[in-house]
Image (cartoon, rainbow, N blue to C red; front, top):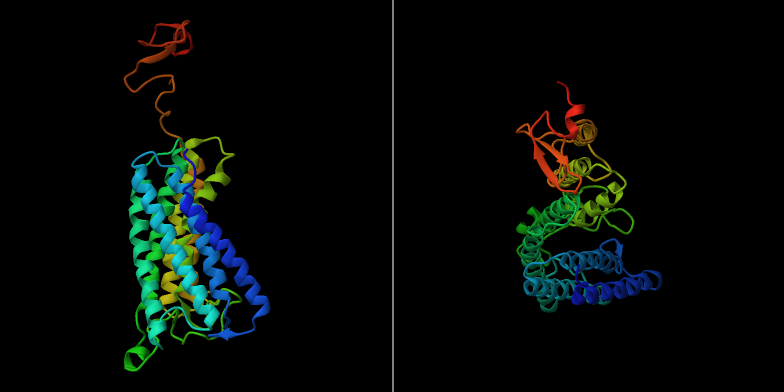
Length: 335
């Protein structure tokens, strides 16, 4: 393993500083914006991007191919992510909306820069993900946890595009200064969950964006939790179950938000879909333990191969192929 990507580590340190400053702002600054403390948004973004950049610093350290391309893409991710959070923080200090804000030429320019950084971040994320997807780790379960996490995370980041689409009310208002929204079915700034701000009276597209984006942290943690299990095949199956279940969760909360439904107030259809998802994960988990493990991994001696040839251990320690009925293992075989 190579050392962690320095620009990404530096970015995560900057995010930690922004988080501390934002936390102090929450305690000392009582200004409100869209129904939330002005410093809540930079705090959330700093924590989220801190985890994001630190995770990428680790992911790029696992690579062995095209190291120069990986370093460059990591630097792009670090610069774009840092710029995005610093602009959000600057707008919070001004008491202005950072997203969807076209109220003044300065607000419009800053939001346009943020939009550009997000596009650059998304392109670099996809390119870096392709590089990492090509790598195989020593443990297949870890390899697939990273691969599935990267794919779901990229989809989650892409779901942020849904928030940039103008609402019907905004399209009707030709002089509107706000284009885009977090909420569905209700205006932004209404009642929301503490700190997160997710709407409690309508749908909120920040939910699938957040859940999807952090798959790259959740699925590797699943592998760590499965480490005590001895069966390599079982652990790999459980990783696929976790990946499928997580992808289903992202799809479920996206569907729920698009139907203008609050996260904590699901209707009957959402509850049925959630129950079906949980049941599917439970059944798949049970089958992961109960199904046969399959053929022995390559490189390990087997009692008998598919061609009917025994792999017997010779006194010198080398494996030699012997027909059935010959060698030391023959005494243990039925006639």
